[in-house]
Image 1 (cartoon, helix red, strand yellow):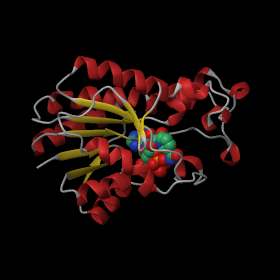
Image 2 (image 1 turned 60 degrees about the vertical axis):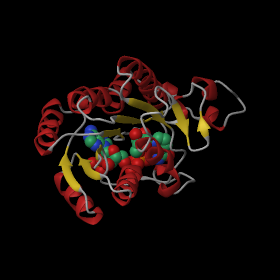
Image 3 (image 1 turned 60 degrees about the horizontal axis):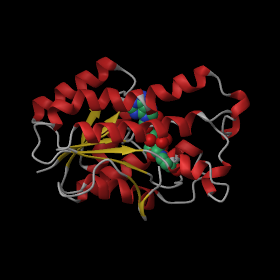
Length: 235
Ligand code: NAP
């Protein structure tokens, strides 16, 4: 039996990933910072609700305690994330980006990933087949962002791509430190969710594909990589 925690699973890509992993036979914790939203999503999915705010040390520690008392964890999916759009769903451009813009976004997208991973590492290291999936973005790729022919190149914001590039580096370093854990970063693709005011061009079913695949990777599978549904991506 595989036990899986997905942060930010009360909606969007996390919710769809939870649906698919429940169908694949995983025992799934639907992580949600809001107890009521999490309870409702978990009930709909036939999963377990777990309150976890990735920006809050006490909340993450309490969540890890609960999961440990229940029997442990095999798969951690660091999915919770924010893009920090401005008024009218606009992307905050370079001229309007401040240190606070980055600080706020990094608190969830970067520090949240480390806070949660650090808290759940002791549980994962006790698993016979531990897996971590870090939900990154195509906008994390320095290669794509600096290539005028790449669709990602048009993206004007600084904070969100920088936060996801950092997630990629964190992934590489954790993967080297813990060779017994499969740890990969994934790019779901531009998907219609609340994150982007539902302007994405893919469905959540399409977007969740690579998250689900990497959550189910075997111990002979890749680690320290960066993948989209179509295959590996350039850093
Ligand atoms: P979404 O529908 O807005 O879902 C984001 C989830 O993260 C929500 O459940 C949200 O909870 C949760 N969350 C935000 N802050 C949190 C916190 N402090 N603690 C716990 N949970 C928190 O967006 P999504 O598109 O599914 O995003 C999921 C992941 O995919 C993110 O990491 C995002 O960067 C990444 N991604 C998305 C796209 C895309 O095109 N959609 C592309 C590439 C990567 P609330 O409901 O409480 O706000």
